[in-house]
Structures are given as structure tokens and as C-alpha cells.
Image (cartoon, rainbow, N blue to C red; front, side):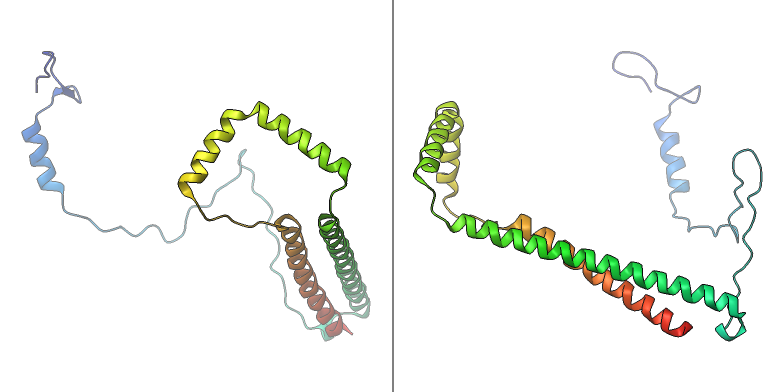
Length: 188
């Protein structure tokens, strides 16, 4: 096949023949299903060819089959888990109370009317901003006039997000605590 600039289009060291390519396509266009793979994937060995030691399979034993020393160790470990979960829950509750108190205080502060000095300072800052960003404010006003409607209120979203996050963490900690207590009770 010749290109407009006079060169010949080559494919695999032979001139490209579109008729031959189309015939090949027609012969092989039937869809073929997926062939099943090997029964198990080949085992990968780490770099260097050394084998990693295999952990022995875990045995499921009844608590009654354990020695008294093993039972005591399990009880101590379960008590430790319960204490850790309880501590975590207490810390999260303290954080939640602090966040709620901070949110309440900021809400009360926002309700207070500004003092004369604060009003003067805000007016001075806004005048300076308007002076520096004249063109941007004009384009924003034009866009707002074109849209003319629909504003979203996001008041207090920052504090509610962290409070919601803390509540989720508290729920997870309570679940963890109940699981730990159940395990401790089973060992008692």
C-alpha cells in the first residue's frame, strides 16, 4: 500500500496488503470463550529463592482442655483487652464532650452582637478587600445575577463532621468493648 508521499507501508518486513488483512480478519473474527486456567496458581517464592517457614495450623481447643496456667494467661489477656477498650471509650467520650462544649461556646459567641471596635475593624478590612479585588467582585456579581438563586447553608458543618466522626468511633469502641467482655465472660 502506497502512502500519499510515495512511501510504502510495511508490516512485519513485508508490504502491507489491506485485502489480505481483511481476509485474515474474516477468518478469525469468531469469538472464542475463555479457556479455564490451571487448577492452582503457581507458588511464588520470595526473591533470593529462600522459602518462608510455614506457620503450624491453629488448633481449635476447648477452654476445658487448657491447663490452669494457660487459662490464667487467657483471663489476664482478656482483662487487659477489656481495660484497653474501656479506656479508649472513656477517652472518646471526653473528646466528644469537649467538641460539643466548644461548638456550643462558638455558637454563643456568634450570637453576641459585635462591639463598635469590631465593627470598625471589619468595615476597614472589607473596604480594603473591595479596593484590591474590584474586578473579581464585579464578575462574581454578574455570575450571581445570572444564576439568581439557590444558596446552600453550611453553618456548623466543620464541628458536626468531627462530632459525627467521634460518634462513629465511639460506636466502634462500644462494639469492641462488648466483644472483649463476652470473651472475658467465656473464660470465667
